[in-house]
Length: 179
Image (cartoon, rainbow, N blue to C red; front, side, top):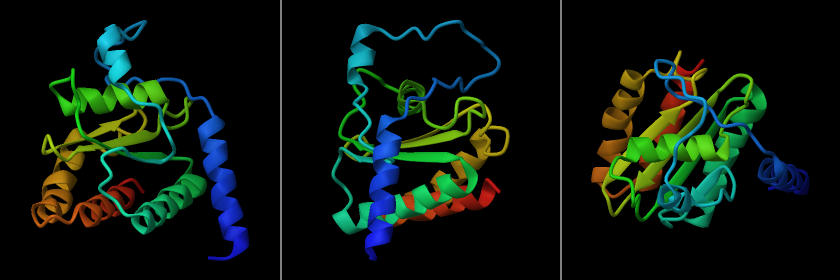
């Protein structure tokens, strides 16, 4: 990798980590004036460490780098932001979809004016995956599309123990459908 590319990735990573976004609503049917998290739920949302948050440690360093490049390039090209999170537990949550939504809102994934974020959360020990979309994103990437990507692209790879391959195929498919 050229030094210029490394500097660009470092700059983008630092820029991403210093940016503060505004929480996105993912449901337009039930607008609320504030997010009602219990203290326990607030404490269960980890701090963002970048566009790839591999808390579950299921990726190798080279896999994290490759996936980061795909996601950063897409963000630069479109201003659409995809964040991947792996975790070992969603407690106190029972629903990974709710966890993914709250995490995306807490971190401010996407741009505030376009609500164009996408948060993918994988809990390997829980054997669960959730994809949460911002209100601008869900106009194109509906729940049905996200569910189909999970079932047809991600889960078959996960069943073979190929977690990185599943996430990468899922991300590429979501990017294709988001055009």
